[in-house]
Length: 471
Image 1 (cartoon, rainbow, N blue to C red):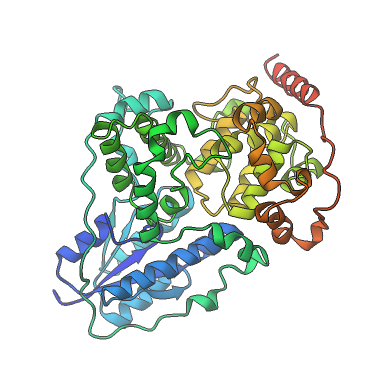
Image 2 (cartoon, one colour; image 1 turned 30 degrees about the vertical axis):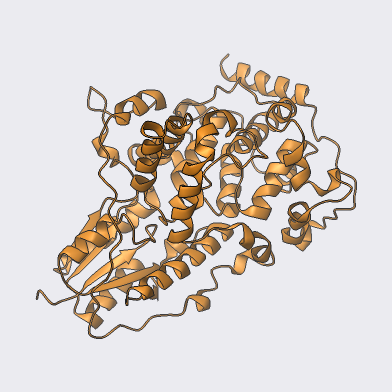
């Protein structure tokens, strides 16, 4: 049976470099059948992340072909697809890289049980994180609930070296049939927005590695002081690539560490902290999976959040009359991403000035972000709302006007994405109107809307609700 092929089930690990699962499979010397499954869990993703995933799958398939291999595409429930492929190919084992969100864990648990019941080998591997969530524990053996102690705990823990990409992949004598990626229409829900968002995507492993190199060669030095300035290209931009596993976290960590120790890059340690912030989010989603659907702190379950409403819809459309908020919401619609400082501002505005449940915002981000990540999205929204771990206290209400003065002092970011604020709007500002649903009936020639709520009044209302909760 040593000649029987192995099935490599790829998910959010669409790369060849630094790939523990791939390297373990190669070490067996057996033929490998790379597989991507469009299962119901993947089909349930929002419009933008599902479309961006399709781009990543295409890029990974092309990379495999350069090594003489290929990516088999199948659609259906994961266990059913795997069982059928085993029957077709005579494969005796299925390998995959672990995921940690509750939807993926439930699916993978069913798959592993089903495969083992059929007498097959089912092996999951690390690869999405620097450290597996169960390996980082407090002195009492529990898990960390606050970021700073978590950072101190992992900062000095050795991270395994990144593994080099293979130069060849052994292939089966006969390839099983594959579906066509285009037939899946992963971008259908994007409608006309896909053409607007596409130029802002840097897709695939080669683009990700190049992006990391460019960042470490320059912007990382000023990362600590410039990363909050929304108009500047001061961040790595690697969030989309980490989301789909187009680059390994270990590759990023070691690059940042070298910049800190060898090049003396002042901002490198801050950058490494941000990478570990992602790690912390996965640490929490593993230990407290309810973070994706309910308040992480149970005492917030009965807070008087508003549900979805007309106000939330105005926020979604980037028409609140607060330029920093609207620029950020439109940036997401045009580029598929949003500057991190801006995410804090729009989150605070929705949950505090508009007293709207954080889940309304989290769900919209899950629909619109091409770098959507289940752990980071949940933790980020709960952090800014005040209901989550390591949270910004609810009484800390970001003022979008003063934040704009501080982090967009020349209004470059605001004018970049808000056509109504410029006599000669650029392509990014106009792109919002090209991407927005026609049903919104938007027109860049109309006057910019007046603020929907007085900022001071919104803050007072939020603090009154907070005081009533604690009365």
